Length: 283
Image (cartoon, rainbow, N blue to C red; front, side, top):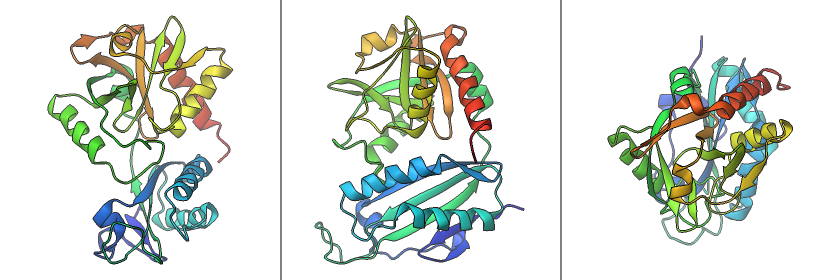
């Protein structure tokens, strides 16, 4: 039987019993990083890739004494084993730790490490087959979106705007052009070419995004990394989103512009290719 367990600073407890200190900088400043890793057949999928991205972020935002990826990997394995979870996600979070509240980084603090295991059934078959509605919103995030920061207020704000509009996702539009969704990467197809915003500070270079682009290249599909204008996006043949949990979901509506999913030939081919990649993954 699966248990809802959490790891918090060297202790595994029931999720509802996990506690942090009130002055933890993740709580008062959003000063930390997170990752979400999929679990299939009781094993991690692409764990190393997620932990490497975490480590890159920890170095960039200067978290001193940040736990090494291998240390987190061992703790995650222990949590997964004790939870007895076969399919779901492990959420990782590392903050700068507890310290007196002041904006500059504390001279010495011990990072807080938090994880929890959550059983989940994904991806959503109806959304995968029928597609989802989206809206376009302004991209008002900071200029280091490649860092997977826990400070997600702009993302949450526009995800809520999408929900209230009856949409699944909000597509963000920067001065440079279309970037990504609030919790997904965005890819479009025009004349057989996949177009997506370039990896860099304006987007989170998603692990699933990277995998899908690699699979597409293996299939001989041309890829162009550039920022689309709103008009260009609305005139693409196919548009889809990717993420760890959603995998690949076609978009059938952007604002008031609809696009029948029966046109999404390449999207569904990539769905099957990703399914095969997961089944054949060296767990």
